[in-house]
Image (cartoon, rainbow, N blue to C red; front, side, top):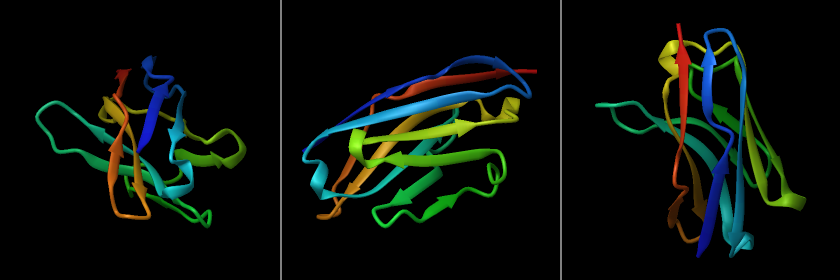
Amino acid sequence: QVQLVESGGGLVQAGGCLRLSCVASGDIFSINVMGWYRQAPGKQRDLVAAIRSGGSTTYADSVKGRFTMSRDNAKNTVVLQMNSLKPEDTAVYYCHVLDSGYRNYWGQGTQVTVSS
């Protein structure tokens, strides 16, 4: 089992920045991929960014060049640095883990609101 706790959401004006953090605990050695997803009201939950155990990252086209995901293995933490935020980035952001057994784990979610 892996437990995830997110922090860092909030309200920001368009063009501003926010930094999301996710701390993993439990069976951390089983973690294969850590990622961030987001879900806006009435929409499906979509991948924002993911980082594999080897360090390679993937980004949604809509956030490339604006968002950066990093991983601190010593602290079992991933960070999503979000710059040049747009109103369309408004959503609940969820931390996600895929473990070596292909089990999925989710954080509780953190609200990000970008005002125009």
